[in-house]
Each structure stands twice: as C-alpha cells, then as structure tokens.
Amino acid sequence: MAASKKNIVIIGGSYGGISVAHNLLKHAIPILPDQASYQIVLVSAASQVICRPACPRALISDEMFNQNKLFVGIPQVFEQYPKGSLRFVHARATNLDYNDRIVSVTFQEGNTEQIDYHALVIATGASTPSPLHGLNRDEQSLKASWHDFRKALPNAKSIVITGAGPTGVETAGELGEYLNGRPGWFSSKPEKPNVSITVVNAGSQILPVLRPAIAAKAERLLDKVGVTVIKNARVQSVKPEGAGTETALTTKTTVTLNTGQTLDADLYIPATGSKPNTGFVPQALLAPDGRVDTNPATLRVDKAGERVYAIGDASSYARQAIHIMLEAIPVVSANIKRDLLLAAGKEGVGEDRNFQADVRETQMVPVGRSKGVGAAMGYQLPSLLVWLIKGRDYWLWTTGGLWSGKQWVKEK
Image 1 (spheres, rainbow, N blue to C red):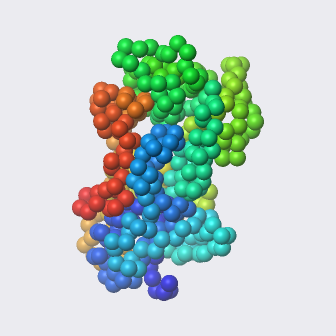
Image 2: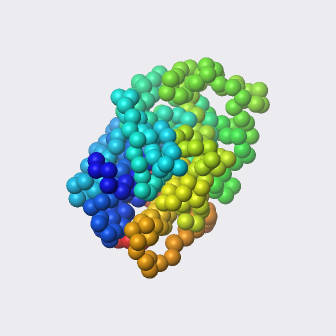
Image 3: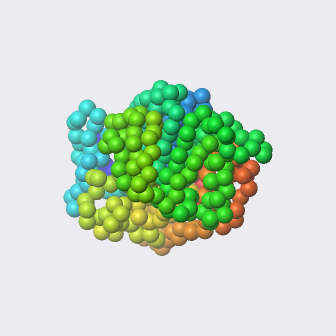
C-alpha cells in the first residue's frame, strides 16, 4: 500500500463498523479533495458478520434461519465501491498507539502488521460469557460451539441459565418451547417438563430495563414453557471452573448460589452481561467499566487526539442497545466527515452534530417463537406486535439493507 494513503481505520466488522464504513464511502470520501488518497481499512477478527440478536434461537438448529442470510461475508458487501477504496483486514487488533497513531493487528497465522491512521473508529463490540451468543472470536468458533451444544442437547435433562436480561430470557424461552413444547392459549406450566430449565437472576426483577408489569408478564410466559425463575440470588461458584465457556461448553455443572441452594445442570449457559472488546486500548482511554471513554455528544475519543471515535458496545456513549447505536451512526459519520474536510483544509464545513440517546423505555424480548414482551418509546407493546417486529426472525429482516449499505444510501 502506498505510503501516501490516508487510512481511515475502522476496527470492528459488525453493526457499528460496517455501518460507518458504508456511510463514509457513500457520503464522505466522494467529497474529499483528492479522494483517491483516502482508504477505508476495515479490521475484523471475523470474515463474516452475523445477525447477533438471533443467537438465542439460532443456537438450537441451522433450520431456524436461512444460513446465507444469518451469516454474510464482509468483503462481499463492499464490492460495490471503487476498487481500492476499502481494504479488508481479517485480523484482530492487538495494540493502539494513539501518540504515534498506529494500530497493531495480528492475523490468524500469527504474523502482525502495523497500520497508521489518519482517522480511527473503534467499533469492536463486546464478548458474551457464553460462546453461543456471538462472535467472541470468529464465525468458525461460533459455529463449532453451536455444533457441540446441539450434540449435547438431546441428552440434557436439566439446563441452568444465569442472567435474566434479554439474552438469558430469550435463550430460556427458545429452549423451553423447543424442548417442552409450545403452550396452548390457556395452558399453564407443563406438569412434567421434558427438560428442567432454570433462570437465575441477581435482582428482584428479570429484564430490568422494562417496567415491573412487563417483566412479570415475561416471567409468566417463561413459566408456560417449563422455565423456572429464581430471583434475588447470585452465583457464588460454578464447578468445574470454566463451565459454560468455550473450553467446557457442555460439561455437567454444579452451580452454587449465595442463598446456599445448589443447582445441577447437564448444560450451563452464563448470560450475565458482556465484556467490551477493548483489550488493545490503553487504560488511559478507558472508562471505569472498560469501555472506551467517549464524548457522548460528538462520539469522539477526546483523550486520543484528533479524529478518533468510538461507537457501539465498546463505547461509553450510551447503554448497550442496537437501536441506540443505529441512531448514533449518522452523527458519528457526519462528525468524521466534518473533521476530514477540516484536515484537508476546507472551510465552512458547519458545526458538529450532537447525539442524544433516547432513554425512553425501549426493548423487545421474544419468549419462544410466538410470544413476547416489550415497549417502544415508553409505550408497552402487545405480544403480537413484539412477535411481528422481532420475534419472527430476531431482526434478520432488517440486516439485508444494513449489511449492503442500502439503509445508508441517504445521508441522515
């Protein structure tokens, strides 16, 4: 690559990274002076992108979703742009030197590369405790985890899930319906479920983002597919250590709670939050929770120098939610474009755009393949509407336009 290239490095090949790349290729690069001197460098540990919210259902069987829509090759979605405008780097970011403005990456084969950047976007997302729920490494490791889980599932008589946020509740609902059957209109909990499924929650309410009445409805729906919820209980220990993770995914597990209760599980699924993928970022740039310390209005990483930004689950700008991130994409993209124009000597480029997160109650949680609970912009949604919007295919209907860039054809 020519040394004269001004690299706009985007680390992370999922919702945030792909969306910013499309925005810049469509709306920023074409208006820059000497646009041929700029190149988007998209760094991703995975070569495919996945509709991550679909994992609670997809982990059960490949038959749940069209795999060609669930997994999409990242390089292919950028073939529409002029040759050389984007370079895809299939590697993991391992170090950020924000003083010399260099990102170090390591490829699967072990070789490394240092990439200098003119602008940098950190969109590395977060890793889940269970390898079943996302691209913690790459698509191959996720598919391997699903294969091992599916192989063990027919012999499981007890499943314990810790964590009662959306991922834990959705996973319990999907497994409950798949293993214990879909409830009828007036049926209560099965008298003798085929598989005992238990969800452990540290708080007094599952789904803490939603109001108590909606959470209680979700609990009733779980009950109908044979799922028991234990509240106000924290995990004190898990034996063997590492159970439910990639190294011991299907190991029989004993979960001990701080209440003294012990739960034996043929399959154990930890779903207690996520960890931001920021291990390559210097501590000086991180917030106390490990996310990149980001200006919540401009989405710049002010401590990192000029033209550095962060978006998505790796950023501190707002709570982790895909709908909030998608609202922020046009803002960060506009500010990147403005900063690039200023750096190129342009004047009269206007003011910063400022982002303000929508903090109204918004979350949709399917419980099985036909029910669900949720709210949007502060209004409670009926189960049918949750199913219609999300529960049918966990947002897979939205990702075609997102990955292809059609969602970003117009500058918002």
